[in-house]
Every structure is written in structure tokens, then in C-alpha cells.
Image (cartoon, rainbow, N blue to C red; front, side, top):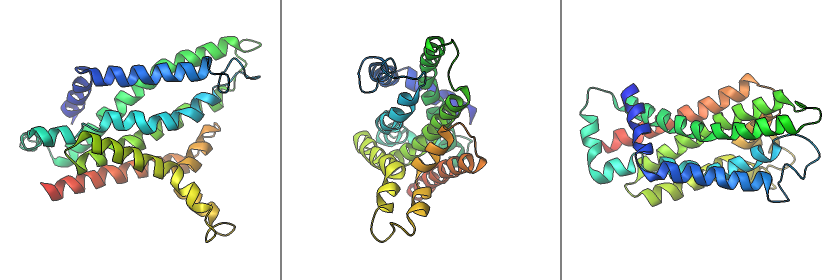
Amino acid sequence: MISIIIKEINTYFSSLIAYMVIGIFLLFMGLMLWFFPDTSIIEGQYANLDSLFEISPLIFIFLIPAITMRSFAEEKSEGTIEFLQTKPISLLSIVIGKYLGAWILITLALAPTLLYYYSIYQLGYPVGNIDIGSTNGAYIGLVLLSGVFASIGLLASAFTTNQIVAFILAAFLCFFVFWGFDYISQLPVFYGKWDGLVQMIGIEYHYKSISRGVIDSRDVIYFLSISSFFVLLTHQVLQEKK
């Protein structure tokens, strides 16, 4: 499995896709946090990174499918998936290896944003006047959220040989599992009765919960369970097409 993870990371960084996607992410995030008045940290009254954690899920909906769209779609279109399956490694290990490779790459893309954290830490009055617990919790929430989106992107890539189709499908599924249940909860059949329960099924509820800085084991288990579900579903799809 380790070899699969290393192969995935090397494959991403041997092409321009990883550099372009990460570069666009950091550029757009920098503009949103420091230059656009509506979301600028400088325009705010408090030293915090709330804008980063509010914007990131929307950016992830496009960033992560762009990273994962080639995972299996490219392997199948080039006919290398059969060669990969002949190696002395189980199909599940291949899926997990590709998943972890994508997740690690996304986490690396988040690492440069720690510079924003340091900047806010220094800009606070007095220096260090920032809610460290809430910020750390929000970063953990982002990492867990990226893991869920990566597993969804992997599933979308397993369904097709076309990378564009995989990207569109993954973006739609990520949008639905994050915001879809919140919209569904507002339907008359649920509103006022089961709306809270329906919202708890969606990711946004648990992401907001963990972003407050309280690391609830129920939220962590939720994220890991959803990621595992999509990884196992990807394995099942590939197994049926094998």
C-alpha cells in the first residue's frame, strides 16, 4: 500500500495539474482573505481566520475533484488498471492507497495557509490575541472534510473513464453531501419536526460543530465513517467491473 501512496503523490507532482490546482487554491484564498473587502481579514474587527474556514468548503468542492478525477479514470482509459490489479496487492489496498495519496496531497495544499495563521497571530492586539483552540479545531475540521471529499472524488473517478465526467460528478456529490441535507431539511415535510435530524446527516452540521474548537468524538467518527463508506463503495464498484 505504501508503494501505491508514493506512486500517487509522485504522479501528481510529476505533472502540472497538482501545481496548478494548489497554486490557484492559494492565490484565490489569498485574494479572498487579504484583498476583497467583504471577506478581508484586515477589514474585520477581530483577529481570526473565520473567512478561511467559511470559504474553504466551497473551494474544496472544485479543488478536490480536480485532484481525484484522474485516480481511476486515467488508469482505465489508458488500460493500466488491469496491469495494476495483477500486482501482489489486493484491490482494496489499491483503493486505500490512492485515497491516502490524494488526501495527503490535499493536506499539503493546506499547509501554506499556516502562514495566514502566523500573520493573524502577529496582527492581534496584543500579539497572540487569537482563539487558538477554535482555529486548531477548524483546521482539523478542514482536514477531515478534505478526506470525505477525496473519497467522493475517488468514487466518481471509478465510475467512468472520462476525467471531465468524473470531475463534474464528484463536484455535484460533494455539494450535495455538504449542503444538500440542509436544503432538504427546509422542505415542509421535515421543517419543524425532523429538520434537525436531517441536518445532522449532512456534513455541514458536523463541520460547523468541530470548527467551534470543541473536538467531539461523534463528529470525528462521523467524518471517518463517511470517508470509509465511500472508499468501500469505490472498491465495490471496481470489483463489479473487474
